Structures are given as structure tokens and as C-alpha cells.
Length: 155
Length: 155
DNA sequence: TTCCTTGCAAACGATTTGCATTGGA
DNA sequence: TCCAATGCAAATCGTTTGCAAGGAA
Image 1 (cartoon, each protein chain N blue to C red):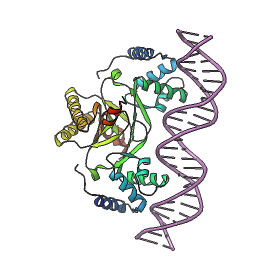
Image 2 (cartoon, chains in turn cyan, red, purple, brown):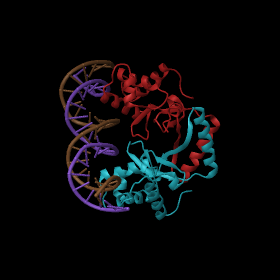
Image 3 (spheres, chains in turn red, green, blue, yellow):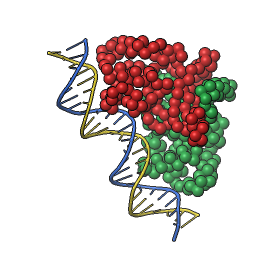
Image 4 (cartoon, rainbow over the protein chains, first blue to last red):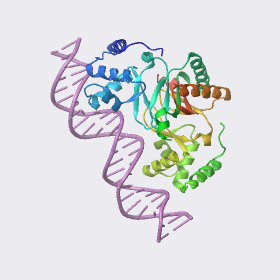
């Protein structure tokens, strides 16, 4: 993972990024970032509320998530269940992709070796250009069945 | 696109697939398939209702979409806006990927040349296996700004 | 006749918003 | 002091479901 290091550093970067926009980095917001940076993949609002110490009222939680989204601190995804999942933006974690379990919906981060990453980048650039798009990024999702579901026989 | 051909053939395949499960291919359902197969990418329920001739009540529309999903006739996606979008499954349209406009949310299909597709397949297989997943498929999304938004200056 | 399908209206659940209150710089 | 942040409750909105009526085999 090519991202920045330990927790403290992330809080510092987030603090600075918010400060640039005149937004305070409060205890509630810090709790959200802590919860999200401990996760190994995108997490739902409910999961974050659960993981955070002390309880975050839903309204505040969603407001924090919205602000983090607008300031480019985190990225929002939607699994096939339609529930939003959030994770730190790539300038904080490094570029990576996801494996998705089609049985239970779990999503986890995966790192991609440089050679493969270069190949992906080239493919995406060429395809996007062909469609008349100015390409900014690419997302690869590997779909499969996770170890747990394989054992349980869910599919 | 490696999929099957004209409209009539698709209706026929859908009809057969439903019949296997003892499900009728009614006029309403046929209208949904017609609307969805005229689209050039995944479409929302609202867009489909709009595109279909005559109006489809929401409940029936969603029930049709659910049935098509369960029978593997169409695939459901969620954009970053959290609204579900539907498209015909790949055994009906051929394997393909998507370009997504980060400004307006539009999603369009793109074909991928064989060489690139093989590369993607290999990368996905290796990454998934490494994460302990039984890999079933892969999804590549090219993110960028579409021609329309580029002109409008939306981003 | 027997099920499947339809359509209306009500229910759901994730997310958002109004508004009065609290708190930090 | 002043404006951003908070938290409760109410509102939204895409989607689902209960139920009675309609239709095909």
C-alpha cells in the first residue's frame, strides 16, 4: 500500500485538509476517521457507528461523512445491496482495489502489484479515451466467494 | 460485443429462461426487457419506466426487475448515488465494462479488446486467489468526465 | 378452477433536513 | 461574541410488501 502511515499522521492530514476549508476537526469527526481507518475495506454508516467508541447520532454521523466526501477525505461506494460504504480516499491510503463476496456482500481491500497496476492504467486510459472521456481513475472489482461463505456453502 | 443479436432473439431467450422456472413472460415484463435492451448502459427503474411505452406501475416494475434478477436475466448495479441501475446479463449482451462520468453520473457500456480482456482476467484471477476468494468475475469501471460535462465545464 | 400477475396504497429503511441548543476559537 | 457543530425528531425517497382484483392455462 503506497499510502501514508500511522493513525496520528492521518488525523493530522485530515485536520489540515479541513482547516483549509475553515471546517473544524471535532471529536465526533475524529471518531469517524478513527473507525474508518481501522477498517480493512469500505464500511457502512451503521458499521462505523458501531465501531466508534461512544455513540454517534445518525444525523451527525451522516453529516460528517458528507463533509469528508466533499473535502475529498473519503470515497463513497455502493455495494449490490444499495447501502453506502465509505473508505479513506486514495491520497490517504494509496491506490488499491477490492474483492467482493457475491454471497455475503463483504468487501475487502487488495493491493495490486506495480506491473498489473500499470497494465490496468493503460487499459483504462485507452478505453476511456475511445469513449470520448477524459479519464481520471479506474476501479477494478474482483467478484467471487470468500473463504467463509465457501465453507458455509452459501452458493 | 459478443452477445446475441436482435431484439426478437433476446425476447425469445428471456421467454425460454422464464418458462424453465414456470414464470410467464407477460406484456409488462416484455416492455421492461424492450426498454432495457434499447439502452446503451445500465438504467434506473425510473428511466426504464419512462422509456417504456405505456406506464408501468412502480410496484410491477420493481417486481419484474426482481424476477429478472433472480433468474439471471439482468444484473443490478449501484452508482455512487445509491440508485439501482439495471442491464441485461452478460450471456445476453456479451462481456463488457463501463465508463462512468464523475460529473453527471452517466454510465455507458464499453467493449474491451480481447488482449486487454485476457489481461484483466488474469489480473483479477491472481488477485482474488491471493485474497482467498474463488473468483467468478471481474468488473472494471473507467472513471472520467464525459464529453457533455467537459463542454459544460461541470468539473 | 388454480395460480400467477397486477396495481393501488401503505410500509420500510437508509439517508437528509429543520430547528433550537451547545461549544470552540 | 459568533458561527460552526450537534442532536433530536420529522421529512424524503427509492424500494418493498399486503391485499384484493384480473387473467392465462
